[in-house]
Image 1 (spheres, helix red, strand yellow):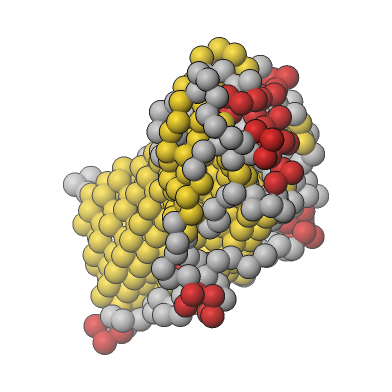
Image 2 (image 1 turned 180 degrees about the vertical axis):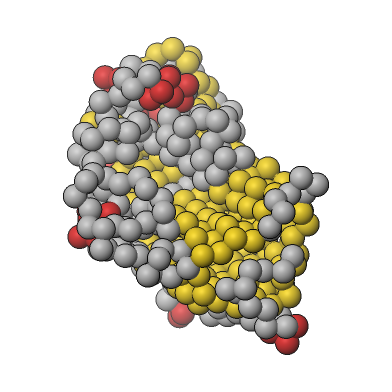
Length: 482
């Protein structure tokens, strides 16, 4: 499906986007004047699409007391609203309140909107979490060999879906799951907060995500994804609470987000060992910009380790990381196969880091013992420029694979202030090839300095990706709810 603004002719016609105003409670047989006992409330958002029909979760028996399960109410609401997919689409409004719920699935041409003081609380009743088969590109679950619990907000084979709000909150109540994980009591992989599979034209924006059981946002096998204005918060020692993980996706834009995590703030993935090689779906054409990350034990941006379908054309800029293990980390190993190439990073501001750059070809986690050790990854065309870091323990740890070096590495215009107790040797490099220019402290000999004349090396692509041409509409509504 074509995103708004991606057609050049359409772009010209949609730069001034009309405000769509739907006054009253528009829902076919549910329309008409506000009913007795209901209050009228206006709300607005910018989105890839506006909707013709609107309903509140209270119209389907939702109770926002923090105690009553609303799983059935949410699913009933989505199922009812799905009939408007071909009639301008529909949206579900979640007003202020504490809405306890298990997993529920969305539909196409649909918006889920969380008002400012709306709090979705993930149920701790495991009966409210259906089990799915493992992802075909992984061959097994991440926590256990079997399947995986369905994510809290889930959708598959969808198009034109928005999950947004006025900074409404989703609380995964992760400690319930973390304890089971640490005690080895899980038969299936923990759920994520938001996941879309095999879907196109998805927007996730203006939300706060708290205490996810595992990964927070996981688009997988998707295209045309816009993620913006997301705040993600989890204890820095919580297990596997990655922020945003685009996985075998094309044309993704992640921007203006703040993440505190127990794992990588953003982890770019594309399948695991022989399963990812066989599935063969890369992540490509990915934009990451204006990200702030705090993750003392992981990376601001990680590429891998599950990268067996390939990762290509990643563009990251204006990244801030504080008290984070590494700025950008590439993780791979023998048996992964696949590739990581054409990576472009510029304008990073890093404060109190263990490493600025980290590449490892010896990441030993494997799906099973059936991987092919001769399946070697291709790591090439890695470009970093315009980076300032301070209070750093070690500038770089770059470890390729013997007989399979990481090549075409370019690092330019980088100033790294070392910590008082920094490592004596700021750079360690093995099985890597490339160049540097204007980098301090002096890099390793495998990355020879080309002098100030090459300070503009490691060029960042000038031509924008199609996801950068997406235009958003302003959508304004009035809804009546209890």
